[in-house]
Image (cartoon, rainbow, N blue to C red):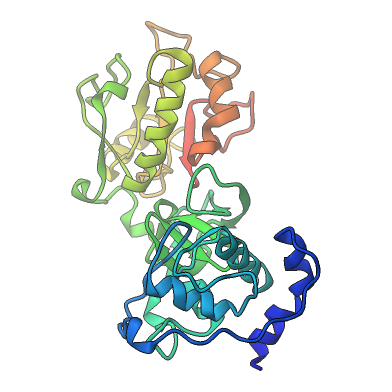
Length: 330
């Protein structure tokens, strides 16, 4: 018996309880599925609840569980045992068999091991914020920790997310270099996404901002912002008006020359320079009170709900910090 199978079978009583069965005898191993039914390719596929086919059957066989039928269907029993396997191997119990889970069980069918090329290394972009870790690749998943600014993060790409040994991190918080300072304010607009004009604040302000002026944001962050906007509109009947998103190096120079430090960031250090921050509407001379001032309805809602969509206000409530500023943390 392999050490891996021994570890899994040692937990048979607990699994029986989990599945609503009494304690039962440990079964003999399943017969292996026909190798001809399994693709020999090392391009790793991810499987999960509801999937069917030879790859699911191969996974069921790998689990060596009495309570999982070799029926080629990722059914509830397979899901439960998959989560149990992940839990006992220090992985997030997502129930999704991704490259990290294939690696933990030994290999992907047809491969001697999960290729090292599946693993990528990234770094938390901003040095003054964090990257949230979630239990699953979704904003609805619980936050279970975070990686601090500029820290190294290694894992497997999973759509908009990176699955690490600690959980899922949104790719919008990450970059490929350990010190991206040279890119602050110098990101090509073509590599970002356009913020819908309907979200723009109605007022105009320097340098050159109008209701029709296009704003840009990190594309991954825009996915979360879109969900936030839909929730805000459902609550208030209007979009959460936006003043600023990405701030170019030239614009950073403009504000630094006008206001100086610390009112304006030193050019190349702005927290807007990576396209990962949003300033909701700020009050001005003609409309001094904003919904996003401390304690106002919009601000109160954002303080309570924005992290559900990957955004946080890094400033303490009620301080001289920007009540309207939110950074993307995934």
